[in-house]
Image: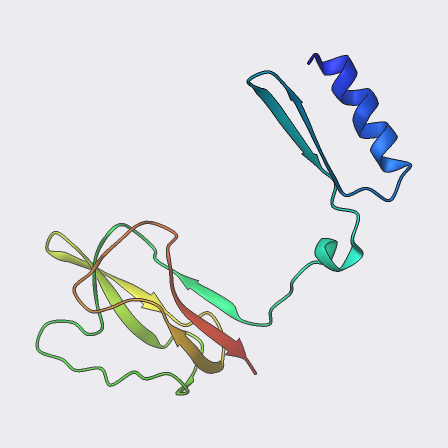
Length: 125
């Protein structure tokens, strides 16, 4: 089936109440699906703010010799150290971007992280 025929079929489907059509010819098969249901087209929004890894490395909740008893539901302030990324012998701070409640901790101590990976989610106050 060529693109011109597919385009015609798609336009025709938009004028009907069909959501899916399957065409078979020998071993060839093509299925077209239209998502015209407004419930499926709605966008999802969230008030949670992600805290992203500032670099690649190994995540630690606390620097060596220190403790950090961070838990979900805890109140955090802007700039508070939530953890560190160990990069060789250096440590990059993972800081809270805003005041709020720590809703989700999505990382474990000692696990490798990638740049920009979400580590925490905060509900701003």
